[in-house]
Length: 185
Image (cartoon, rainbow, N blue to C red; front, side, top):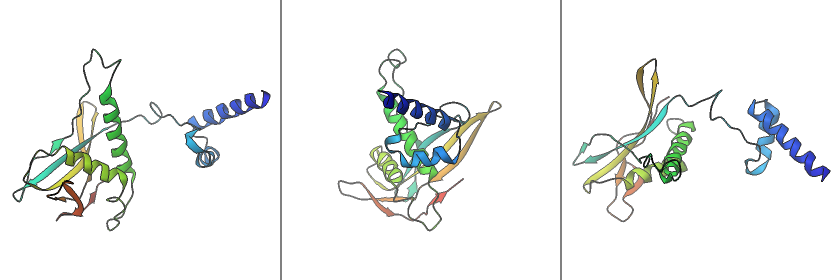
């Protein structure tokens, strides 16, 4: 029993130090302890989210690019949202995928970004939202929006390659179309 108490006290102490970002020790411990047992919560200060990421996409039809459209999953009824909120899972998944993609640091000639799971998943999501049967290519982008001193700021964070549309059951191929990858920081 005493060993169990000591174990929990040590776990609590390391978890508390990790919230303060105590340095190399907690980073080393997090790397070697499985399953994320040493948590790091940053919901609020010191690093709150200052911008929203929005996933937009467009399709090429008859050789011309259509207007950009934003992925909107909704938020459910305000009467039941506090109790049941199934859209929260989808919105959180999109936000995590976008953040994962923005964290990749690939060079211009590096194909690792296009082959990353977050890129492929986002491409799949926008391809499923496609409503144009005659589309020959699809492209997505990530836009960051924020409000600072009453002014709305919009910044382009990422633009994907254009991907050709196939005629088969899997509508989009991984082969890039004419435009290249742009990673904007």
